[in-house]
Length: 199
Image (tube, rainbow, N blue to C red; front, side, top):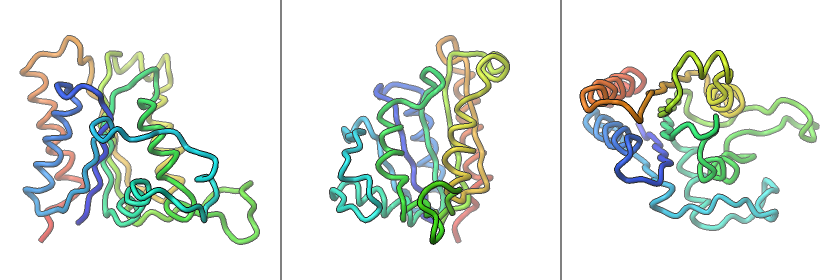
């Protein structure tokens, strides 16, 4: 299987990078091909120019590459911190430029964009790994868990990805090395459960 892994965290020493490393290692150990992008390392431009908005737009080579990979992927894994209940801006920009018409979704004939799109992504399974410094109960009860809504309802459901799993690891800022090792075991197990060994 071809799995697309997208990482968005500016600090190479972050736990997000450790999650990404564990994810990639687990996928490769199980025989999967990995498309990996560290958006900050690649200096991904998150700004969507107006000329890219039409579905038949001519895309820059680097954006076209992302679009091809995401459309070919048998699975998608997104890794990012919780910043103000949102993904980092660089990742939001990646969504703007990559999860686009005729790549990830389409409107049915006669629909000028006012209806519910039809999902086009090949993959039916996606994982989102998040880190946070907010307690889980506060995140859900006070803020309404906005990242769950963004990724599950607003993005993946819309694009036809029905098997969605998300894990939030918190509180990062006071976590011990032992706790982080346990979390990485959870990451490995989650990846294995979602993407079985490629034979």
